[in-house]
Image (cartoon, rainbow, N blue to C red; front, side, top):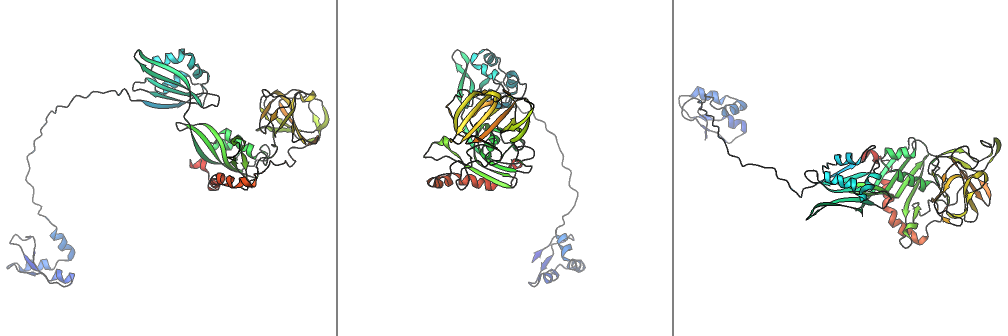
Length: 464
């Protein structure tokens, strides 16, 4: 039995239903309220949806107005005062921009401390800060709530990972400052990058955020197979995995390339760094996946990057002598002072002045080979006859001494005292790994070479 709402103002209607189907249940209600048959019949004839609507209706009689009263009460709040946490500090970092001064940097770092400024200006130990303020460096300052300088960290030149650290020290006689050179706490991170050659190697590395030192290493690694002066093509690609040495999350310098691949004119060259743990770590080198030494016995070029102004030829018009003669070397145009590197391991056979060559260095390699570097402006410090040099060592600097019309390097390559074209001849390779070293080599390099496979063809420079 259901008790329906009282729609008609009388006692509740009592409804009974059978336990048949849903539609039958809705139509089988019998009305047991006398005197209201037609009204009940009207209820029985309604549809399912109107029945639901009727059962959901409430009486919309007007509500009685409720009187309202506004009460305003003043609440007593406790007095609040700003408190200063003397131990609170703020760490800020700023990069040196062109034209910056120490005072401008301190202002951007949030330093408001006349005592600290006076110390920086007047102390002899802090003058390095003013002398080595070069664009690109990062200064880090820790300040108090009111801008008091608590510490200042400034990386120093010299490649020794040292910094000038200025610190405030609280003592019984008041605050004092100290300035010391300290070794930076550093961490090493492995970085993966790829890039595509559009115009030049350095242009591609800059666009991908790769440091110049890494690009230079790349040219050194593959310099025996790729002539970076002549062989680069638009669309060449490279992938590189290298170490980044960081301080407080910022790169301080770039470390060694761990693995790299360079695709030049459709041909892929790949190398991974390996140093035998049983040997001297500094004597490591780069090898292919099967253990062959990627390094040739000689570099293709004694300069990192320059243009070739005169090639190897049997007849060239000499710009100074004003006559035709053989040119049995290669001339590289470069600014005065550009570093000149030994193209192979050897011994200094001659260093000094020699006729039209001007200031010249001659190196002997493996008895059969000699290389000559002429028109130098100067020699590497301490270079003497009989000194041993390694491939890549700086031996001198580009100049215009001797019979030279302008600054350039004249480079000759001789085999058994016969001049050869260094750009065309097949250069001998350095020794490969020994069979007993291959297992250790694969264990060390497998992960890095797998990363090269992972990032090949994927532009991480855009994904960063």
